[in-house]
Length: 210
Image (cartoon, rainbow, N blue to C red):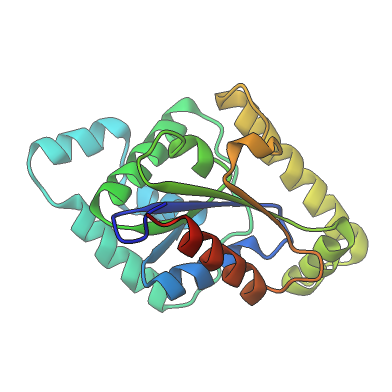
């Protein structure tokens, strides 16, 4: 990936791995915007968009991206918590999300977190696909702390999300989110914190940047 040209970095992660925080910190270090599925869903609901509506707005030469970006900055500045997991299963929603993310990536360099990022940008020029994973015990402890759950509740939440994300990927692609061939870089967070992971990614970027 060439960091000196427009780029997109996707962060796919296991629940409780710290991947979302890694994505946010990476975006801050690279001085680009960070987008995740929860934000895209909020944007979609806020503007009532479908693929057809996006095309209609573009045909009218309206700058929907500027509106999106302004809404993003406003939403991001509030520091309100995003939903832990919202499941999208319809083809139309998948298509809308894909179109929104790709339109954003056309306009700017960005970091995108979400279970379908590596699919959306699989053939995108100048991209980097990353997968963040962690040992189960670490994931359980993190989810217990972040979501104020009992150990049993945290385990159930992880199992539900793991199954949901894998089912989602298999619905739209003939692959698994755990297939490392889908990624340029896989990081196991065992004995690492988020800053360590960002440092590893930045080193990788520096060494592979043309």
